[in-house]
Each structure stands twice: as structure tokens, then as C-alpha cells.
Amino acid sequence: MRHKVKGRKLGRTASHRSATLRSLATALIKHKKISTTVAKAKQLRLFVEPMITKAKEDTVHARRLVARHINDKDIIKELFIEVAKKIGDRPGGYTRIVKLGNRLGDAAEMAIIELVDYNDINANKTKPSKKKTEPKAKTKVETKPIANNVEEVEAEVVEEKVVEKSSDADDLAKIEGIGPKISELLVEAGITTFAQLAETEVVKLREILYDAGSKFKSHDPETWPAQSKLAADGKWDELKKLQDELIGGKAK
Image 1 (cartoon, helix red, strand yellow):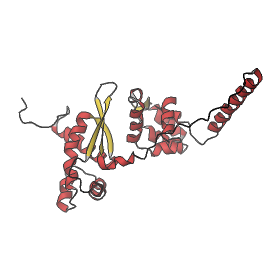
Image 2: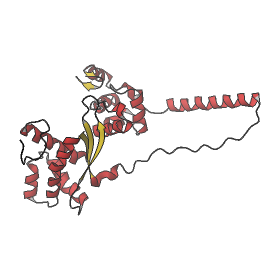
Image 3: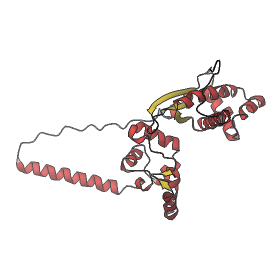
Image 4: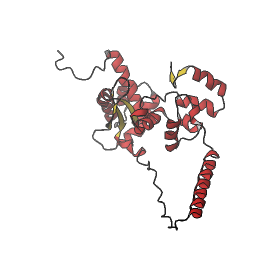
């Protein structure tokens, strides 16, 4: 019986559990938002919030206490300088957990944990506005005018296709693991070229897939930026070698 034993074991030994929480805390401070299981997110909240409280007082002692758990000096500097100023006078509750549903495969309950004061990053996202179509003028029911209207509509469709083909967008489906539907999702998110995809963080790509629905949650975008970097630089032979080592865009 586990009397007065707090916390979650997460199916790991003490050392493995500590290493997992340290890496998650480092990623959270760096990216301000990460996706993981609900159990890890809840345990990470208990692990990282006391460190953020210590960062309010920028002293040598506080930095040494935080350095016991975070080994990256740049992340410690960002915590004490940037994050500490951002949280201001907030007495606590620095993180927020948003559940995403169950993961395909093992049905693990997934969630996003983020720093509350950085949620304005996604507030600037605007949904594409629907264009209001002006009402068409009523015409008499005749055969010839209807045929002309059909020809005009077909001409407009052809013109739109020509414009789309003449754009500078890259064929993102050349990246292993990206199909036509995922390519459309990336274009809707403003990612149209290999260079843009190479600069996009994996956390952001996972967020796009999660927002698209359960059909896309099983896809892993971990290798997409590396593949896109080779494609953007025109290194197709190296890209071919890398893709031969992948299975559906994932490392073997």
C-alpha cells in the first residue's frame, strides 16, 4: 500500500522519471507550449511551477536551485530574464492544461500544457473570412444565355487553376509522411514552401495535426523540417537517402 506517497510513477523508475520531467520542463520553457500525455502534463505542472516561482528573485542561490533540474544555461537565462518578467505579479497558476482526446494506437489521453502568459501567441490567429458573394442578377430562362454563362464559369475555373499553378508554392507532398490532405492543412496554416516548413517547429506541426481531427493525430512530423531543409537547399540525393531510412516519414 502506498500510504502518503504523492505523485505519479509514470511507469518509470525514479531516475528515469526525473530525467523525463527535466526534459519536459526544458522544452516547456523553451517553446512555451508542448503536447504530452495528461498524466505527464499534470506531474510536469507540479515540477515546473515551483521553479518559475524561484525565478521571480534573480539571485545566485535561486539560479543554483533551478540548475539542479535544468542543465541548459540558455534556458535558465530565458527563465530568469524573459519568463520572470512576463509572469509579473502572478501569484501562481503559471500553466494551463488543455485535453486533446485519446491518441491512436495506445489510446493514451493526450493534452497540451502551456504557459498562461504566452497564450497571446495564438490569439492573433484569425479564421479565414468567408467571402460574401453578391446576388446574381436574374435572367430570363433561355437556352443561349445559359450556355454562355456555363462557358464563362468554366473559363473562370480555368483561370483560377492557372493562377494556383503559377504561384511560388512548393509541392509539400514530396516530403515523406505528407500526403495531399496534410499538404492542404499546411497551406491553410500559411506553410507553402520547403523553406517555411523547415523553419516550423515540430510542436507547431503537431498542433496543426491535432486541430485537424483524430484522423491526423497518428502522423509524426518529427522528420519533416529536416527533409524540407534538404529540399529547400536542392539536396535531392541526400533527401532520397534520408527518405530511404524512413517508414511513412518516421525513423525506423
